[in-house]
Structure formats: structure tokens, C-alpha cells
Amino acid sequence: MAVRLLKSSMMSSSSSAPRQRMAQVARHFSTTRPAKQEIQDAYIISASRTATAKFNGSFLSVPAPKLGAVAIKSALEKSKVPVSKITDVYMGNVLQGGVGQSPARQAAMFAGLPASVEAVTINKVCASGLKAVVLAAQNIQLGLAEAQIAGGMENMSRVPYYSPRASSLPAFGNIQLQDGLIVDGLWDVYNQFHMGNCAEATAKKYGITREMQDEYAIQSYKRAQAAVEGGAFKEEIAPVTVKGRKGDTVIDTDEGYLDVKFDRVPTLKPAFIRDGTGTVTAANASTFNDGASALVLGNAAIAREYGSGSRVLAKICGSADAAVDPVDFPVAPSKAVPLALERAGITKDQVAVWEFNEAFAAVIKANEQILGLEGARVNLLGGAISTGHALGSSGSRILTTLLHQLKLGEYGVAAICNGGGAATAVVVQRIDEV
Image (cartoon, rainbow, N blue to C red):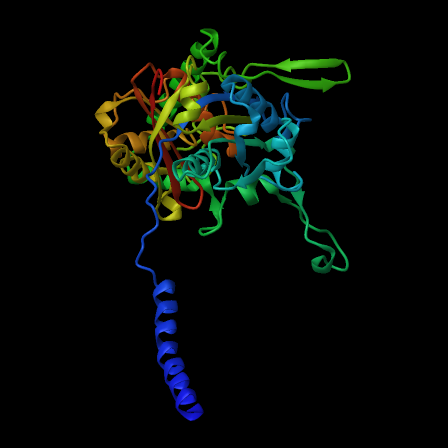
């Protein structure tokens, strides 16, 4: 009897083991799909920037993160979004030598944000500030955050010169310093020449003459001068208080827009190619500058609650990056813009205002030619040639300026090329409410 019971128990145990194993496998490879989550819309609630100061100008003593802090604080105050809703800050910053650990984190902390707010520094060269906005928007679109802050900052006046570490220094003799501005901001590492040479290559390829570039540069300065005189930038600029020996100075106006003598523009010598064929000069290229910009982004609930009455409330309709050969970086926006428009579901004819970064006049003329934008409303208030190009901030700066120009219902596009052969573009639509 005992033998029969033992045999029965063994048979039952051996038959149940495969069933248990199969159940475990079924659980591991469950066919039950997780609940789908739809992509959410992302909105811009507010946008603010500092004035753009001249190289070695009013912001010489103000580190980039302190400039970023002013822009962040201003944008947050304008948005009326509680700081408790902000979980992340993305800030572009290109020339980070000597700036200190985690520049974006510094900007967030200096702006008074709590230590619990995460911060990430973005370096996509000139497109850093605009890419920061895209990354923040993606967090919202994926449902990972309710509200974010994004922008960029740069102080080109404070970039140090570089020296090799002691182990690589000669035992005797002179050493040579490298200009951090050139090494990390203005040099094509693939072709080993200045980015201005890339602009020259673009001008030659697309038949853009010296006269066309000079004419555009003069137009940029005249538009910027009219914009400042007409108060076009007042709503977007947050004043920066600069401490000095003789007291505090408040900087609330762009500095470089008057630094031009129109009759001398055609007489300047080419800056990069000097064999008689060069066309790019100091006048038809952007300048070195210092400044910062920031925007507050939110999901539909945030925009609905805090966006009513906002001067810049806008929906982010689409964005795109694109890459080309490094030498062709000036025309990279012509690749990114069509992608962004397609993702936004609109055509170029529906765009009311365009903001392209004026790295060089050749950049604007080439992209206008490729995209068929001759006669379109491009850079109506001037641009980097006349008001300045603070590298890490420029992308978010042109977006800030774009938003303040758009009327309700209008679409706008901000696009910017970056060194290495790439670009970022964003499509927005001004709205009254969500």
C-alpha cells in the first residue's frame, strides 16, 4: 500500500512540474500589451532674454550661468507657473572652459530654483539653445513632465586661452596658447579651417556675391536699429544689473546694433580668403557676443491654467534636426526646415514669420534660395549680424524673438545651423488659449 502511494505521489509530482514551468514561461512572455499612451502637445508659456552685449562689453564681469539665471527667473515670473511644477531645466552652453561644473545647474540654482530641479547642459554648438527647447518639449510630449524650462547662455568675452598640461609642455622655451573661442566655437575640426571658410564655400556654390552679402548685412543693421528705436524688443528683454566700482548699471538694450558705418561695409577686406576671391567680411558675418534666453514650456493642463493672457502662448507643432557634410553647415537649415514643416503638417506658404540665425549673410541668402523664400518675411527685426550671436543662446533667442512677433493663429519657424554640419528647426503657432 505504501509503495502504491509513493508511486502515485511521484507520478503526480512529475506531471505537475511541466505545467508549473509552462505557467512561468507564459507569465514571462505575456501577450498582454501595456496601455498605450498618446503623444501629448507641448506649449510655450513664456519667453525671455537678456540684452545681447558686445564682446568685452557690459557683461564682461558676468559669467554665463548668471546671465542664464536672469533669463530663467524672468521667464518663470512671466509664466506664473509655480516653481513646484518645474522638474527639469535644459540650457545650451558651448564655450564651457572655466565656467564651472554643470553650467545649466548653476543657472537654475542662481535663478532660485530648488535643489530638487534637475538641470542638463546642451552643447550642439550654435543650435544648443533651440535643441534644449526641443528636448524639454519631448519630455512633455512623452508625458514625463508637466512643465520645463529651456534656453541657452553664453559669455564669449570670458572664454579663456588654453595651455597644455605640464606633462606635455617643453622642458625649455616658449609655449603657445590657444584661443578657446576658436578651438571650441569657431573652428571646423574636419577641414582644419575657420567656419568662415565654410561660408565662403557656400557663397561660391550658390552664386552669392560679395554685393549680395553686404546688402543683406546693411539690411540687418537697419532693421535692428528700427526695431530698437520702435521698442520691438522691450517685452522680451529682462534687465541685467551689473555691479561695478561706481555702482550698479542696468543693461536692458542690445549693444551692437549701432556699430556700423554703412559706407565702409563695401570697403572691408575679406576675413578668411585673401587671394582676391573672398567675399565674407567682418561686416557680413555675425559678431562675438554675450547673452542668455529662456522659455517655460508646459503640457495642455499647464497651458490652460497659466497661459491665458500670455503674450507668447504657442503650440510647438513640429521640430527636426538634419545633418550634412561639415563644410556645408550653412545650408543645413534647408534640410531641417522641410522635415519640421512636414511634421507640423503645414507648408512653407502658411508660415507668417521666419527667424534664421545670421551666422553669415551667406547662410541666409543660400537658405532663401534653396527653400524658395526670396521675398518672405525673414528676420524682420535684424539678427545675429546686427544684434549679435551669443553661441549657446542664439537658438532660443531667435525663438523668443519669433514668438513676440507672431499674431494669434500665425505660424512661425525658427531655424539655426551649427558647426560640424547640422541644424535644428522648430515650428510654432501662436494661440490665445488651450
